Image 1 (tube, rainbow, N blue to C red):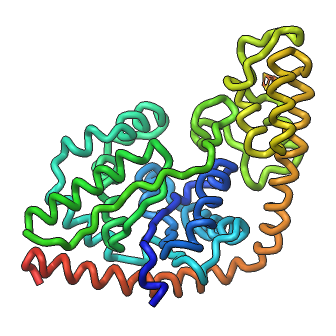
Image 2: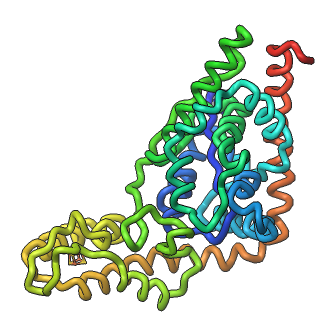
Length: 332
Ligand code: SF4
């Protein structure tokens, strides 16, 4: 009885490569908390991976399984949340097709990330139907489970808004209340930027990966952006514009953060010393994750079982929703 009262939440990650620190801090830490209070659907968005990796999708399968091992190491529990592979649930594609019929193209063209990603990923040809339509696939992922909330970063809020518009349009068109309008749940974790101050992402080559060994982490931190106006050791700095300080806020003890902030402003600490302190604290955190991950690596074969079991549970919902949709459209 208690369980059925829980709100539903859905979130997925595209398996396009190794996970980085931004995933752990920005997404997985949040999932771990949510799995205690929501009925969670966590999915490997392998169809979404195809939107940018269509020219060589051969690694998606391996990345998918590796990624789930990272999730387990981060404390995501298949007993608490439903973990599944998007392409195992054909209803996502079926709903995507149906929604494609009712979504006006200008709605998709005005999604901010459509233009942004196209401009940023200049090495890919993204003038495809699949890339334009991926927010409709996202809407299907959400609506098929009638999710109440979608945990997102601020840049993903327009996608949830679009999903709400699509849900409304469907309900209005067919005079039904089939779809619940989902709410965006902004992640409370501070945003972890990439080494260069842009959003952390593989395509920007600015990530600290969860699998990076200590030497690599050290080297990356040493190249991390500081206050650009602090040129000499004797210059007073502004920690709030320093990427390094943003990391301290997440990985260093509260007292240390306060001390570094003050010392930076009064030029009592140099950037090298400040970065060395960060390396120590950041590595302490990452090392713990890597210990758990190396233990969990033995469970490679179990990922198929997780997908199988999670897929069964997800399908219970998705097949029911598809039936309701067809009834509402009178095409059953
Ligand atoms: S001292 Fe630390 S916080 Fe201040 S600018 Fe240098 S790296 Fe950034």
